[in-house]
Structures are given as structure tokens and as C-alpha cells.
Image (cartoon, rainbow, N blue to C red):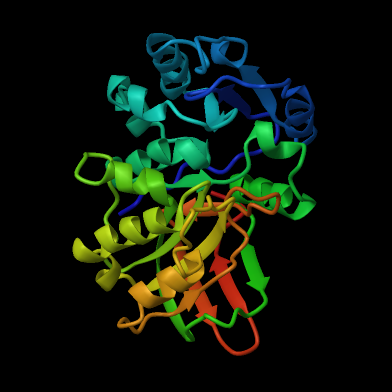
Length: 304
């Protein structure tokens, strides 16, 4: 049974830390918005720290996150940004107190390391969603989705159809995140179980051949065959090659999963885009893909 952290309520304390790269700019506007939501925001030491490209060295980033994992008064931890670096500290963390008092962990991109570990190894829900560094450019809908996820409101996304979609309806536990990071979790204690799950994937700045290779790894491992549904988000800022690969990221994925029967949808609003909607990992969801729309329902309860 996957554990659900308590939903937030007004006056709850949350923390912002940077487990990976250092911030490029102030996140005070994002903190102000979180405070408008009624939350009390505690700033981690890594908000101001820097060590080469990281938000402090590995020891500092791990210690900063550890403080808030252990503090029962902190009800959610939001990563300030992604980048690279979370994999360097994941094995330095002690989740003993976190397991006693689960709390929401929020982020995307490189923070998929943390989300995958919490969902896979610790069997606890987490939130793939906008981070303070992306708040400024985020769509109102994506910020509202994050708020709803944190406060326990029902989340339903309805999006237009895509020509590569495969119709169907499925129910299952939602897992996923950044494809490159999920591949990096393979074979480690932090990898997620994909069996009977609805998987969502996104990535940025990859070559098409690299996307092909990563998806074929998941196929060869048997993980793609055991899914109940597949949601493809943004695969953007694709790198160009002298000799074109000949397929888009979406066409690559369509070909790789063509032998399976589960519903598959493309161009879902999740990933390194302004409209990065909150996705609750470890949550039971319903996916419906038909000729008129795609709908994802993440049922919540506003009270504990």
C-alpha cells in the first residue's frame, strides 16, 4: 500500500531546498505566492549556497534536505530547481523520520531521482510539478494544479486528441517523470516498479537516437509490456544531428509500444514546459483516451 502524506492546510510550514544545481535568480516571487496560499515558507541553506554549479557541496545539500526530512513540523519540501546533482546525495539521506511522518516532496527534472526513490523504495506518494525557479514562467493552470495537489483537491485534466494516440481506458497507480533520470535509476534501490502502472514520461535536450535507446532499454527489460497505460508529455529542445534520425520522439515511442494494447496519449501537459501540470506519483488514477478527448483523473479528498 502506497502511503499518502497529509494534505496541506493553511498555516502549515513547508521548506524550499536545492538538492541539485544552484539558483540562477531570486525565488522570492515564488515564495510570496506560496505564502498567498496560506503557507509558512522556511528557506533552506541551499537557497543561497553555491559550489561550482551546485547549490553547495554534496554534504551541505544532503544535510539541508535532511533537516527538513526529519522535522515533523515541515509538511512539504519543494525543490527550488533541478539541473543535476540529486543522484550524488540520495544515498547520503536517512529516511527513518520521513517514514514515521511522511510529507510531500515536490519537483521535476533532476528531482525525479528523489521522487522515484520515495515512490519506489519508500512506497510514499510525491508530486511531480512546478518548482519555485519555474513559477515565474508557469501557466496559471499549472500553478493551480500544484496547489490542488498539495491541498487535496480533485485534479482532472482534459486535453485534445493527438493523431498518434491509442484509444482505451485504464485505471492504475501513476508513476513516471524524466526519462533520462528514470533510466539512471534502473538497477538501483530507487527504481520504480512499472507493473500494472500508468507511466508518464517527459524529457528535454536529448537526441532522438538517445530517446530511442532509452525506450528500447525499458522495452527489453519488460517494463513497457507490463504497463496499464502510457502518457507522453513534452519531449522538447531536441538536439539536431548532421544526418537526421528520421523519426520524431513521438513517432519513436509509438513504434516501440505498437505491439501493446494499453491506451497511449501524446502531447500531455507535463515536462519542461510552462504548462507543466502536477502529477501525483503513487496515486490511483483513471486514464481515458478516445476520439474526442484525453482525460486523466487523479481523485483526491479535501480532508484527511
